[in-house]
Image (cartoon, rainbow, N blue to C red; front, side):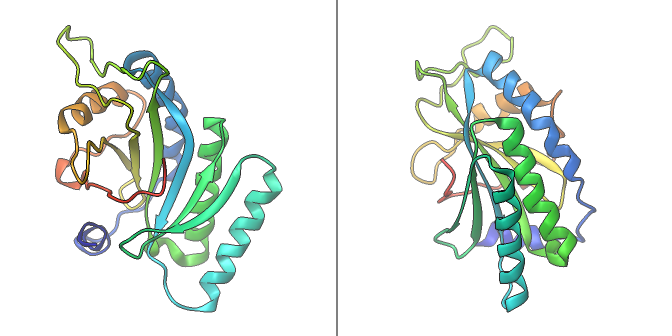
Length: 205
C-alpha cells in the first residue's frame, strides 16, 4: 500500500502529539451543527504489524486494558492491503477518543510508535440523509448522501484531515475542503494536501 509506505518512510518522523486527539469531541459538535453529520460511534487505529511474540503480547495487554474500562467494544481487523486495525465502538464520542488515545499511547510507550500509521473516526449523515457541508458562504454545498465520512489522525504528524469517499475508490474533494474549513478551529488540520491520503477498504463504518 504505497500511501502507508510513504507515511513510514518519506521523511524523518516528527514527535507525535496525541493530545491533539482531544479536540475531536468539539469538532463532532461543530460537524453536527454546521455539517449535518454525527459520530458513527466507531473508530480504528491502523498499524503495520512487526513480527514477533512481543507485539502480540502488547496487543493482548491493550485489549485487557480497554476491557477494564467497561464501555464499548473492541475487535481487530485486517484490510486487503495487509494492514492491521484495532476497531473500537462506543456511542460516547469522548470515551471513544479516550480509548483511541489509550491504544496509541500504549503501543507508542512500548516502543511500537514506528508501526502506528493513523487513527480514523467515522461520521454519518443525520437521519434525513442530506447533510449540508456549507461553510457559511451561502453557496451550494456538496452532499455525501448516506456515505460515512472520516476524520483521519496522522500519528507521526499529529494532524487531522477529512476523507470523504464517494463510490468505489473515488473521493469528494470539494466536500473534504469544506469539512476542513468547518473543523479548523477545533482540530490541528494537516496543511499539506498531498498528505491527505485516500484510505480505501476501511474496516470502520
